[in-house]
Amino acid sequence: MDSLQQRSSTVQAPPAAVAYRPTPPPAWQPRTDPAPLLPDASPFRVIGTDAMAEVDPELLRRLYAELVRGRRYNAQATALTKQGRLAVYPSTTGQEASEVAAALALEERDWLFPSYRDTLAAVARGLDPVQALTLLRGDWHTGYDPREYRIAPLSTPLATQLPHAVGLAHAARLKGDDVVALAMVGDGGTSEGDFHEALNFAAVWQAPVVFLVQNNGFAISVPLAKQTAAPSLAHKAVGYGMPGRLVDGNDAVAVHQVLTEAVARARRGGGPTLVEAVTYRIDAHTNADDATRYRGESEVETWRAHDPIRILERDLTERGVLDEDGVREAAEAAETMAAQLRERMNADPVLDPMDLFAHVYAEQTAQLREQAAQLRAELDAESEA
Image (cartoon, rainbow, N blue to C red; front, side):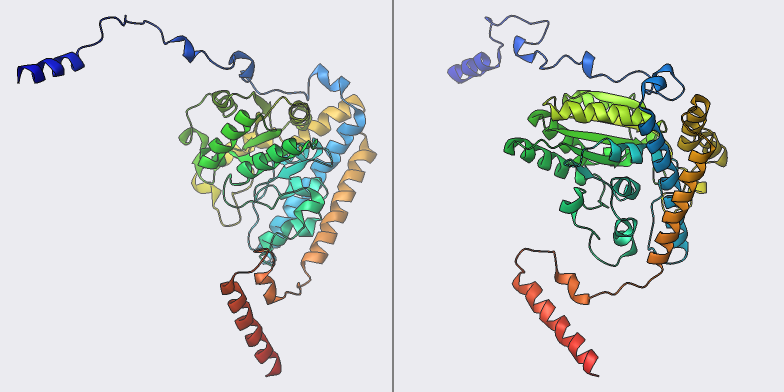
């Protein structure tokens, strides 16, 4: 018994040779200096500053025309929802600057990974407006060939497209392809595990990917303050070892500049960047949402005064970059697009029920083959009746 007590006492006593350390051991040293990764204290802006004089006038006019077209696209798609031509439409009215800038910051060989709300970014990148709405109409699968447009399928589950973007970007780098992926997500998506996993993998692998968070104030009805206590969403980048950039999401020129720099940095091997664009969702979450239950009209009107189209048009007009003819031409082009969209969306699509089994597996499972055969027999019987 005495020897057992002696052994227990020896095990429990702290080793006398180890001195108390007031600081962590040297192995703790940070891998990266956090200071260069921190975002600015306030959102970066270009419109209304002297920096506007250095921007290519052709780029400014193109940004303006795309914003006007995007606003009309949002209005027309919302109207189609009310007419029953779309099952649902998540509008980006008020967020057009971030949508357009994301599309224009990429080269043709790059990839865009949009969320379900980012149809406008896909259209600005060159996707047919009707194809962009096919998923939301519920007619068919994605509605377009992702490889043709370098646009991943619109992602309805929150943030699941982010790890996919990291995987593609990492694979491209391993193959030696000069490709960058830009992944878009809302502030609500930053509360998902996929967001954190994607950022961690991207930073560890130094993958050529850019994350664009459109902070529009609400995840449906949940305000940002109930999602995070961080100084900003851009600050989250530091914890993963990548730069965070905070930008005025209604300043199309600023967003385009920040994203262009982030894409260029990723392309030359600098790794990922997290960009937070501070903007606002003017319309409701979708046509199924009643936004008046969780926010007041005065808040919405405050943001209307910072409308991305209005502030850009005012600045360009004052600088002589945009005249009345340019304003009219942009509006007419937007109306032409809306008229064509109405006409094409009002035509009932010809659907093949057998498409339910297409593009699911490269080789169908036995269960799918059985189900497909059963459906084919039912369709044949119906046509013969």
